[in-house]
Image (cartoon, rainbow, N blue to C red; front, side):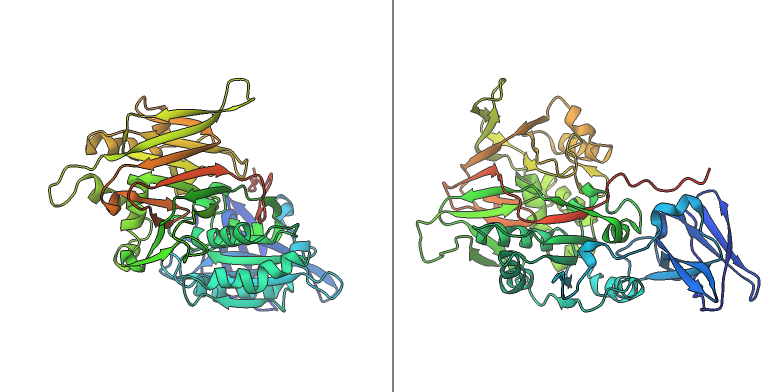
Length: 475
């Protein structure tokens, strides 16, 4: 991929262009300048009247000096260049009108929100908004949106209850441009499904990924190229986000504050007998996956970005204190359709000891980590991946093969199948081994407790994704 020279054009400059491989070379004679733009970095092309003629403003993701081609980098900028003519092979980037999900007027009554998760990933959400999103919205004529920056882990949930859900219940449309990782999206899914009991107008979420793993964004292809999520914001269509419900025995608690805090999962925490429910759209897991997510959710680990998961996994598999790799004890029961797809049957999985138990609605948990290669974007299918106790070296080999296009599911030691749900009856005396992961949130189940996960039939939240979008080939 070609790097882009950092050149800001003025209103008087107009460039001619030619193509070199998969880049667009733009040149002006007076003054003499040249800009090279990779096709993958192009966001849109906007026709503009200038001195009685039509010229074309091309907007693209631009890497600042010493930066990297990563949308999460604080060195990314919105670049623009004025072209004398528009390349025909960029016709599907042509910007002619604001899409309905970004239209807001007195007649449409659509509200538009920009929500920045300030703590996601390596904390680049604010700079991405300032350097790219804010000028992009200004260019295309989107104004009057509400801007919110998270102040705590509860901010997105509070926004749901004070703004998003009441508006949806009034049958009013809204678009949430969410600069976040999976956590912000998970908060919205859980808040809507936990609260809404009547017919609503689902909010449309434009996900601009700024997290560490970005499972949903990776699975939807929003991180395929630096500009993809921004192209989806302008050209995307809405689709339902399938969800599951994870129900827990009484006494389950969220683990907070880097493992130091406990908050009851039950909506009525005063009722010790109340069971609890969390809604998710990405993953429910127990075993090594849940443990590595829990252990790596610290400031110290987060500075390593996505590598924090690998570092935590190695410590779990190869404990630095020399202890044996833990064998997770419990009974895992699957709920699956019978061969005629008429009745749900139960199937006990394994022999009571496990290493990796994970159910997912998405294909890719982090860049290149294809946990479920048969999953299709938003198809609603829940897949189980499980393997039992094995040597840490062997387990690392299995997990590493997921980075090779999901080859781990072909390993004879790995169970991989479509399910309707599953249940875990925990047989672990120590809380450390009774931690589960629901879309990145960590829950500790009490001794002798259980977790049960089932697919939900309702979809209350939409997401913008690109359909049939092809990147240009000038040849």
